[in-house]
Image 1 (cartoon, rainbow, N blue to C red):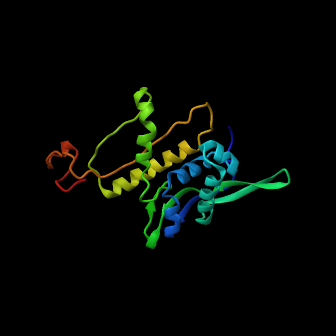
Image 2: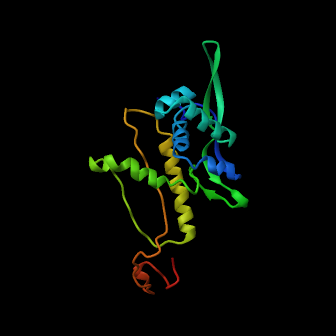
Image 3: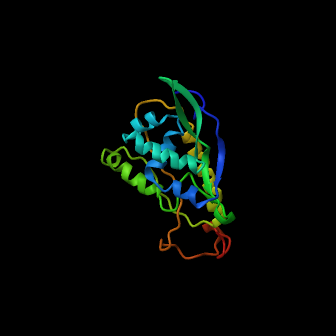
Length: 201
């Protein structure tokens, strides 16, 4: 598939300001539906076929997403004298803003863990030697973490916008997290070590 991804107009970002919106994201199937709609608008029938679930089940979850303002009808077409609706996301990226506090999110509620999903999905790829990844550790400030997160988010948006080619879907997991008990070297005042003072970093 070539051209704009997805094939309908949507906002770049949407603030989630109600518990209903956040809860709507706390379900793996609804997150899968949102992921599919990153590619293009789709009908209930198409989504049902893609996730191999009954249309009634998919329709229920799409209704939850629609009522939460995360999904909307972007166009319709006539199918045997009946209007068939095609759904799309309302934004490329969602972020939680309950009580006026912004928390960046690609669309995951607090009780839905993207890395738990990635771990489950990537098992077969790991066993077949097809899991590519890196892990690094660094002592950084909260400001540095936020700056790096914005760069990570831009990379995720680039991945989402890639033209759909080939026959295999690939997962792309990206994250940054604090580690309370990771070993650290003693602080040093030696500038050659990369820190100007014991309080740097």
